[in-house]
Image 1 (cartoon, rainbow, N blue to C red):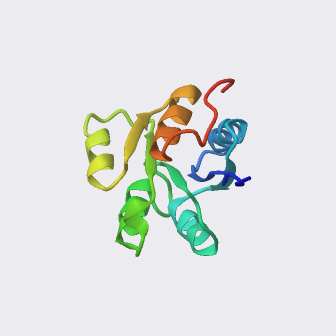
Image 2: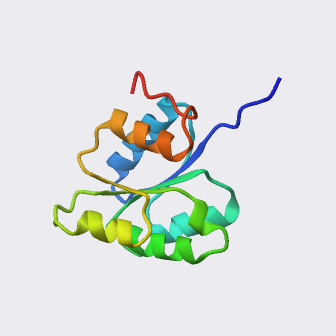
Image 3: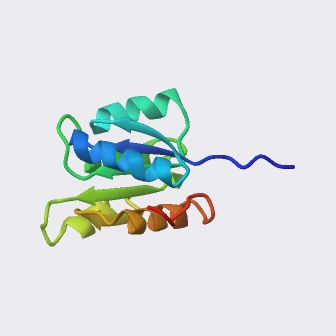
Length: 134
């Protein structure tokens, strides 16, 4: 019997309350979660281990999600790692900028947990995360 790989989600969010909420949402959906407070910490976490999906805030101190996405996409193998960018910044071009910089998906805050998990699961190929009960 094959053992199914648990999806590992890297969450980069500078607001500790939102970061904790994202951890609860993804753990509740069946994922393992690595949570960090900025883009540089996310790059450091990627050096230490493998993840299946990155969920990042668009604007953080030290290194924004936009810069993280640029650097991630420039790394060997970084083009294939799915990225969801989140933003409370209501600027009209935010979605366009996120997608232009390499994000696979952009979601505005406040985030509907079930939608976030559904988008994440789709990027992971489906059937990796549980959307119900989120």
